[in-house]
Length: 136
Picture 1 (cartoon, rainbow, N blue to C red):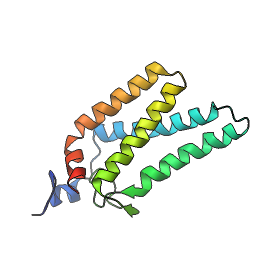
Picture 2 (picture 1 turned 60 degrees about the vertical axis):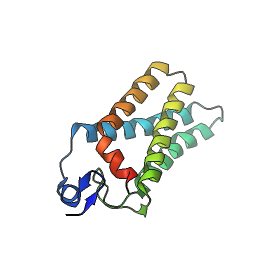
Picture 3 (picture 1 turned 90 degrees about the vertical axis):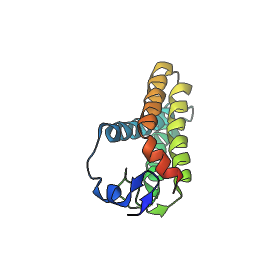
Picture 4 (picture 1 turned 120 degrees about the vertical axis):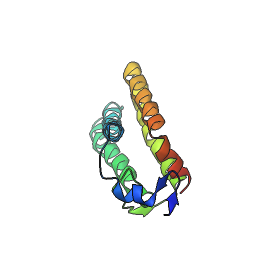
């Protein structure tokens, strides 16, 4: 049996269920996209704010969905643009960190703290995935 980090190949191929931490991650992804749109809408660029409100979440979603590690057990397994696990992890930290900053910079202090606390909880619970990413 071939092993990738803490996951065996059979665990990767059998992982079809969605757990609470997967749901949390998905909600954090959506929350990040909303934060980008909110930040874009509240800039001082007049009507261009509406463009930012639409464009920034699209950019975030495209980055999140495009760059992936092949056979990542937390995803569909597909990788439109394959990247090493460390790059994927860095991308996730940048996208979620930027969402935290977007909320914080707009004066949403407590909301941003709840968000970043949930991000930290998610990654603590996803420790196996982090080790797997860093090993690939």
